[in-house]
Length: 442
Ligand code: GLY
Ligand code: MN
Ligand code: MN
Image (cartoon, rainbow, N blue to C red; front, top):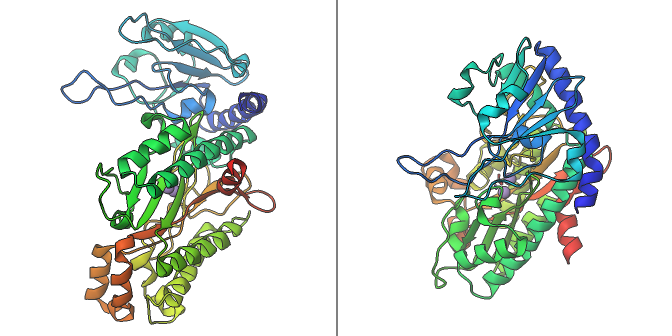
């Protein structure tokens, strides 16, 4: 794995430099300093949550454990990595990196964050700062911190992934697929949600804090909670279905994968199969030039068809979409950009200026109203759930008359269905990172 990532890193960094050069020029900066971040203790405590680096830092330097380090870049000069390795005997200081990708940087090791100041070269230059602000940087001479126009410009470009980033995400998909296979086996063999989560982490080779988001491991009715966060310890719970939304990360790049399984019940099994067909049709629609809002609306159309054929609604497909009956069962967006952040930046961006593209009317949860371009990585994650809160709202308004409540009651113990793949938009046919990863480990 390291070999393919190392061989593509230099080109990635060249792209990052070119995009940053353009953004700096547009906003009249001479250079940029990016801080990796700093752990912050819990309130009234001396322990911090797991360190999560600034994604801008990871875009340049794949260092997941390097708090208080800096990347400094001035166009025309080699990028500089100021690596913080404190003299500390309470914790193991981060290891000074010795990897092929470092050849692209000038490396400086400092023992305190303050020592970095002299290496950042702000005197007489307009150097932009990007990162969580620390009061001690107040007199370091930065020409502004996290200026929104500069961030907007940098974020817009991040939607198009480099070959290196795609390779990271292919590997993250394989780790995720390994975890998913193990988790399914655990659920089938009677493990609790908590044990199933542990089986996932073990097989993916990740500790919990290395996951890109908290695993969603939901049995039965829990699958109706979109971001179900509990991990029940008991095995003897309703468990007729299993929804797992879990990913992995490699060098900071995420996978985001969901699968749903049933206990053999024919009606629920047919519903899962119908959703899988719809999901695959939507994955095939990930093409350059396609407005992702259209993919979202197509998802409502397909899910309305699934609802109708399953006998969950009595109205036409047209009515189910037009009167938002499909939204009762599918109340989230069809997907989002994926990358260094699970819900990656710039989903709404019209261009580099920070102007945004509106969501379709009546669809407040779509995170990506952009037109797809080669290099975008998006998730495709249609869902169909039995959510009491939304069902009761629908029962109380006009939509309830279209719903077959007996069918809803039969299917409620299964909670819901979501199937989520990560898909690369290319100049031709889409690349499905998730399906490829499951196939590769089969
Ligand atoms: N795992 C969060 C999401 O699918 O968006
Ligand atoms: Mn997900
Ligand atoms: Mn997702």
